[in-house]
Image (cartoon, rainbow, N blue to C red; front, side):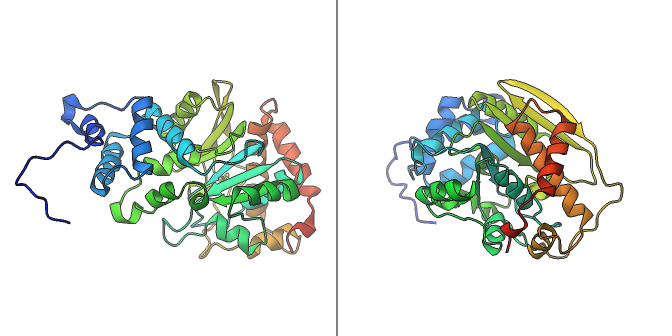
Amino acid sequence: MADVDSSKPREEHPFALYIRTLGKGKTGTRSLSQAEARDAFTMVLRGQAEALQVGAFLMLLRVKEESPEELAGFVEACRAVMAQPPATLQADLDWSSYAGKKHQHPWYILAMLLLAGAGYRIFVHGSRGHMPARLYTEDSMAALGLPVASSWPEVAQQLEAHQLSYLPLAHICPPLQSLMLLRPLLGLRSPVNTLTRMLNPLRAKASLQSIFHPAYARLHQEADNLLQQPRALVFKGDSGEVEIKPHADTRVQLLDAGVSRESTWPRCLTDRHERVDTPAVDPLRALWKGEERNDYGVQATRMTTAVALLVLEPCLAMDEALTRADSLWQSRDRSRLG
């Protein structure tokens, strides 16, 4: 750390106000308003706060736990600072993917393929490398020959040609990606790990999000409501990814036009599935092409497809969504994965 010249008083840094607001003791501390959160995070993203201040800011939020207003303000700041997509670029479903798979193969990618094959435009964004020993979506899609973009024009081309595109966070908002990579340094998750899931850069009407801890579902929904997200679905997925665990009951929370409703999707496998030693994509390819049987993979794919259909078409009942997912699986284009 550089030496501090204490020979003369220093003017208070503008960002110090936000740190003081969050850290003024048990009686003086309060959450930031949505406008304050937007202004503070804009300063962070534009490099107008010192590194020491950013670390203090993120950890104070971590200890206090972020409020819906703070998360909404952070997302607004990111949307203003990020690389702006063309105004005409649209997607039907925003699919956030930031956790990576640790114990199972990334079956959710097959759900993306089924939805794209049904004509829905699926935009996926995520990050990799911030947690060790995980298989991330970017690497999985690249290994399967699926569309990974490096710019908004590429996203437009891929959505037009394939109804599916993945764009890494590093190409959407580089400062936000840098904050994601602080986790090994800080030793804890920060609000960044939450707000990225609500980023929805293309403002898709439907958003699909997964959480690590059930308590965060309410936080996501309240922040999405403040952001005027038309429809958003959140649940605790496998390893934190958007993937239903077929051997467990799953509480699904859907926000539709400001109204929240909850349902429980019962498990369809009674036996607990063993963890895999190393998540990989070869089992996905073999299952998709019909070369191997994997009951867990089929059920994870169909149930994840069904919950995605629920947020895309909220008029569907659970059994209708599952029936449609089964139909998409039976009629899949097996040549899509070479």
